Length: 440
Ligand code: ADP
Image 1: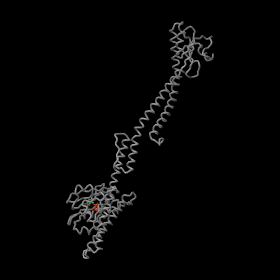
Image 2 (image 1 turned 180 degrees about the vertical axis):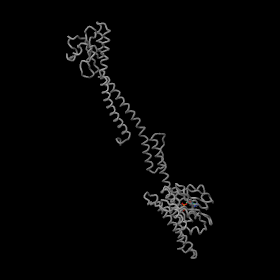
Image 3 (image 1 turned 90 degrees about the vertical axis):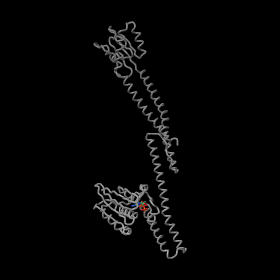
Image 4 (image 1 turned 135 degrees about the horizontal axis):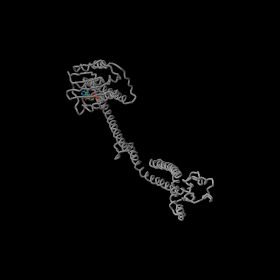
């Protein structure tokens, strides 16, 4: 549990990264300081300065100056060619100092490093030369120590800070985890409160959005189940009631036909409901068979008007067709269902002797099909919901006409599956116009 915690992971990762970076930077700093200290320029500059200092110092006080300089790791010895060489230098190493014509300070050993020997020729203009031993080893040690202290402080302070900061990073993750657990328990109204504007804040907003979407879907599922049960229950109740009444001889023989007729209508309603539910389930599933073919849309519309003839003849409706010869590329059977539904609705919700117009329009980008009627219309407040599942403006009237409020939702689903659009405009008691737009 402890080893798996995100906080522990963040802190250990940080400490590992800091360790690696500190080791690397320590190595790089060592290389750089050593290189800086061993280049020849500072050594020669020191030798020049010592020479200038001794030149302006009285001969009897030079030993005193040399003594003071040794406190700064600059050791000097005045020599003449015949003297013994100091600092265990070999004659070969010291030889360049005594060559004639040399006037500038020069290195006496070729080995690079923090300790160098420099010869300063003819330092007091009386034939005395000087050999200087400049030792930067102590200086380097101090530098390394300072470097180590700085890097160690970075490690300690950084680790303490990351311990504090990790709390800030891990806390919202813990909150999200407990929110997800709440939701898993079924508490869909649980929301995360925060004031963060960063990515974690965005994640929390997405979580809240997801929760409200799930809540909506859950509500829809509940409504759907209760609607389905209601739609099944009401015809079953009337079938049961009428069959029992006929069985028990409550209904006189001369009225039995009417009641059998109702039973028959109710079975039709149940069968239509199961047909619509199956169609919706199939359209909802990802793998619905979908076969677009190219065909003449006007011919399809004309045929549906012919098929529905008995319905519109019965109401003595005036049907007007304003069609264009136009080919479309959609699933023919599914669109057959769309037109059938819209046209039978137009007939169903029209009064006797009304007019229905089926009109096609080509905008260049799409073909529009308007199905207009002069029927009872849809009240403004119901208009946004007519495509919702089981929505019926007037439940009693729709049911008596064999409706179940699924027709338009199936139509909309088919239209959306094809990437097409459907719109509705309606005015109560004036009429309704459904417009389907199919991209060309
Ligand atoms: P139903 O099976 O009840 O007809 P639909 O989904 O086809 O279900 O339609 C939903 C509701 O929209 C209907 O109950 C009806 O009130 C309204 N409606 C649909 N088409 C029309 C129309 N052409 N004129 C008036 N109302 C309509």
